[in-house]
Length: 473
Image 1 (cartoon, rainbow, N blue to C red):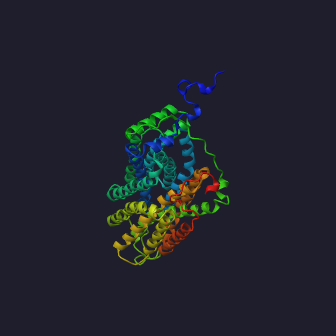
Image 2 (image 1 turned 120 degrees about the horizontal axis):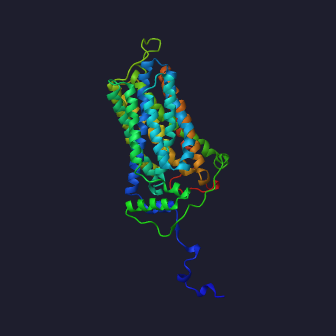
Image 3 (image 1 turned 120 degrees about the vertical axis):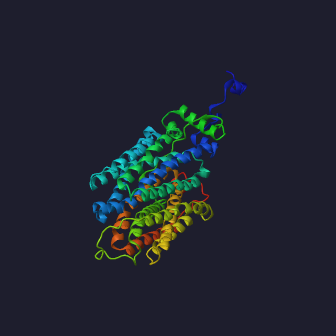
């Protein structure tokens, strides 16, 4: 028998252990950030902007429905709450479908879903149908969230955090566009036309989504290796790169943690603290979105009459109110460069703490007796830092949890955010009607508590490698 060493490697071929291989993650890191990622960023950002149209519509629709249908504050608040109930109940459904049928497929179905039930809302004959249809729209948002998963799968690690922060630009753009449309459409055509027109861009986005490839990670998980390889080849070509040397292989399986692992001795404190941060982030952000129309509609605390003194329950928004809302929304653009600088200079904990403190500060300033111009500035301040909280909290959470429980950690935090979003309409629209000062102090106090919680987080993730197991946290 001839010894192995007597044969050349060229005759035998490379041993299996020495053959070069790479995963989808390796290919994404190799291709870098280029034209392909810009295309994905633009189209997924456009999807985010159309979602913002539907979400921000709630703040301008509430005062109109209150007047047209003589709704109570509880009924108005419930219109927003059912949207987040739908989102909460639909997230798991869309998530499981995305794993089975693909990210891109679910995104396109979700866009049609949101558009269809959004347009149907315009034909609602009564209040009950409004609730049912807005809840179904909220379920569609659970599928739209897949756009964040999809885009992040094509982003190299070193730019992922910054791109996610910049992605807030498209959401802010959609927010401003919705208020602009409300100013043009509501006074002349009415709320039904606004609801229908706001839903159309989501359907148009589907045709842009059609130009994107399916997620390479999903294709590999589904056993479609050749299709995944073609996606990666086209992405590299668009970026002027070639694929890494070797054979494309699946990523090694990751051990999945259990829900109770989030409450292990190493993670219990981190889990509870991040839950509060997500709850506070959603409560404050959606709270000011809903409260701004209430505040501008009725003026500050010194200009308001008590409910017993008011002869008319509704005061429709004026052109000046819409302009003030547009100016306030500009704050969401301002916070993007601020977070880009502070998140790497001061770290994640300090950036979250600063955002919460300034949000609390401007919430409390809103109750001061002052001019309309200054009131708009205060609302602008709240919108600026409240929107900044979400980006930094998301980045911190995705970095602080070990790999084995990262998905569980993010999922549980997202659930807490939706709980906050479900509750906040009853503060921003019901309690605000009874006592504006009490409502503003509740938001301010919550943000201060969250700032202290952020300051006391046990781990700073700036410059820290992602942990793999619980003991690495």
